[in-house]
Length: 161
Image (cartoon, rainbow, N blue to C red; front, side):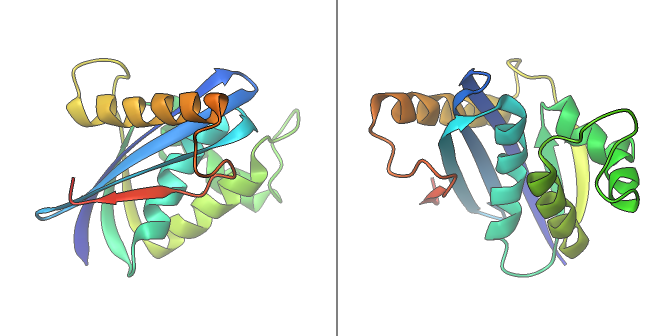
């Protein structure tokens, strides 16, 4: 399997509000940046859209090391929450499970790829996490000012940056 490194981040202006995500995919000398967002969303939805959009870009099953500053996303896999939710019909004990559509899609994609999750500290000294944050925040601002090319989550792709 090809070894791919992915960094992701999400942002939201208001919660709910306009939101964006950013991701960087790295394979050998190839680097792609992808970003997108929605007009009305939440921070957690954008944190999920980063990994989903990145994994959708892969053309074949890969071994992926995926870095995120989202405890919600990383813990969903590392602490096994998502496996319990799937087993229980996408319900959680004691209340509504939010973002079921995105959690199901991320779960499906992780069934195709061998994903190792790594939690990084947000807004710290990780250059790739900081770049993803900038992509997410910038796209959020573009949605708010009406200059974003897409507002339905569709990613914009910049290759070999």
